[in-house]
Image (cartoon, helix red, strand yellow):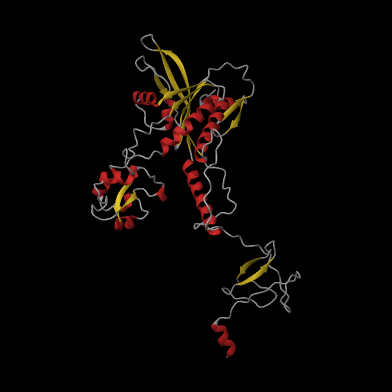
Length: 418
């Protein structure tokens, strides 16, 4: 059961508890078992998101107000913000696909495309979406082990993308719709009567989609001048034109699609914990957050999930002073060969078993080198410079190596000639 930090320090000082985990800080009582303890349960509230998820442990207790009525107060005990790496996984998958496409095109130029009759198992999710479900479940399971969680409350994060998407007009294609929308003129220079290309405001190489709101008509010179630059960079010197174009742009639906795809699997997996779970609408969360005058963060949204009768006096009376931020970092790279910035493999040179160091002014059994005339001296595996025999120049250890003498300077050559 979560307790005050002063109480935790007292239990540790008296030897009644030991530290079970550092982050988050968890202690375990030594002189009491769970069956011998009677504690009130806490609630786990989860606010799932596309880029981050908020989790909060709360407790609700009835109290008596100044008028003698009974109200419910909610106290925040622990707040955790989980940062996902779905975008990084998606970028790595696209990079791997590019490497494979290049290898296949180089080795088999006229290879036929692969058939699209492949099937996926039920409940399959792409790696970037599966990561969001797995990391949220892992952190929720950890909190359920550390605290006596009796209820799980989760926000129903479902989005209807149809009202937010202005697809093509019925009975027309994308080019015809764009011609009507931009009056058969270039969106960048307003020229008419010339061939117009379909241009992406946010390029595909920078994560842009092919939605109608991300497409404009552009003449050939403007399209070549823009290239793969974002529209904000291309029209930075023309703010009026940029503002008019950005009015047509809508928010991408990638985050909404990710939430719609992962909500059902996340709720089913949380229900498998054996703890009662309830889902609440986002409208109720927004109402509670507005009534308590809270900011828009994942952790505060998690505290606001669930019903609160504000007219009766129910309120959130305590908020965690510190928020634990957990960032998903992955398990490293699974690539067999790490490529360089151009996509080519990094080749490792074979080791010869000998290392060379640059010695300056070191005396060996031979001619002495002046400072600045460093020569590469042979070394063994332990880094010790091998001593050379003065007659043959071979190392005293018996292993023959090739020595490279430093080039003579012009001053020394002139002295010898004179």
